[in-house]
Length: 310
Image 1 (tube, rainbow, N blue to C red):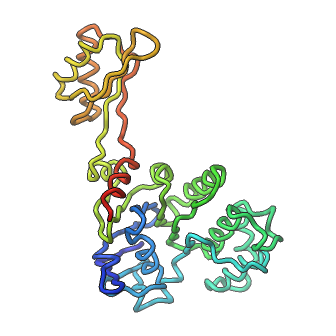
Image 2 (tube, rainbow, N blue to C red; image 1 turned 90 degrees about the vertical axis):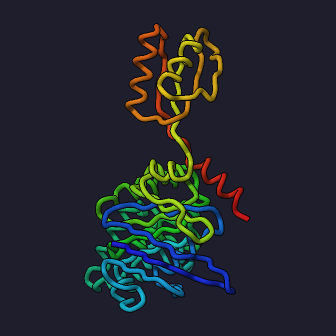
Image 3 (cartoon, one colour; image 1 turned 45 degrees about the horizontal axis):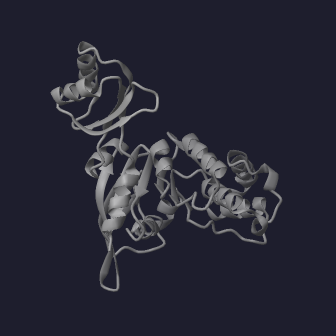
């Protein structure tokens, strides 16, 4: 659906985006991540056709954004960080205007508006002026405006920035409804949102792609390794069993309720290794209250990236 190849953008002789490649298949959700200043918004503006690249190519559903702009843009719905709404128009009027702008046939405009009002749960504010809405409702109206023409690709730039937890959960639910039907490129700093919604991730740092793949693959590429966390009644024997299985103990903490001890181990951790640890502990008579593989948080990798970025 979306194919980006070798995208470059320079400002003042400096590369803001340096050879970005990314792909979003039809019906999938791709998280587009990176520290502030990484080049995400610049890349998105080139993807949707509002900023020309200095080099590279963007293709949407087979249409080149710059040689066939009308065909490409007809496939796209875009919600910037701040939804561009007419303050003195009602929600219904704003959505009808967006539908006509995106080429929805006049006889279908009313039905298209009604459909996205229901989809984005805007019925209670449909007759209110956009300028009088809360930020959460403005973002939902912006999303509805991006969806009103049923685009093949939806591009979201920090859609939940500044929203309360309930509004974030609503956006997450809407994304799940779109999965399998609409390709989504989601730029966000809310990493829990990425973990919950995205099939693949692309991580940008200083204008370059530094990691891409599934969330698990990206964790590995960024050096965020899984850990084995367990609670046992005999930490000495447990540590010996872990070493036998090729793991190293990194933390041991006595639990409040004796005789349990919390242990964290690292190394090459897979479900098969977890099984071997379980068997070794059982063989040595160590009681186990918990034995889980915990994937390292992406926040850890982003903290490191932010510290490294000048």
